Length: 109
Image 1 (cartoon, one colour):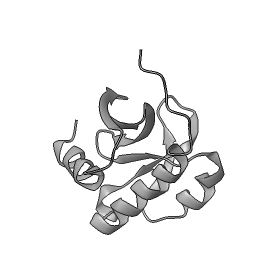
Image 2 (tube, rainbow, N blue to C red):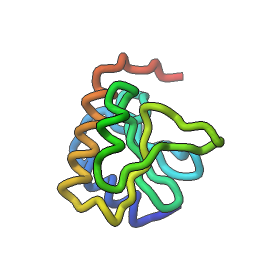
Image 3 (cartoon, rainbow, N blue to C red):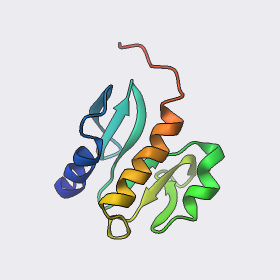
Image 4 (cartoon, rainbow, N blue to C red):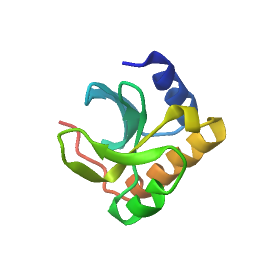
């Protein structure tokens, strides 16, 4: 796991309520009320933007489709950290939060 990427996301998410961390996909995911919000892979950020925002998100600098198993996961994007300064990182978090924040909270198991 990339410690620098994890720390950058922690900083961008600081002070947000209902956010938890969980190891997933070989990286670290941040959950909002139990729903996947964003995270890190080996070398990239991951954001859950929702299928309706997929096309617009993929036009942003550094974004590409999320493909882990050979099949594109619609509604999720990888973002190149070198194309993502602190300001654009907060914008990515806000985009993901708009989508994930509208989802019902998951029940704690």
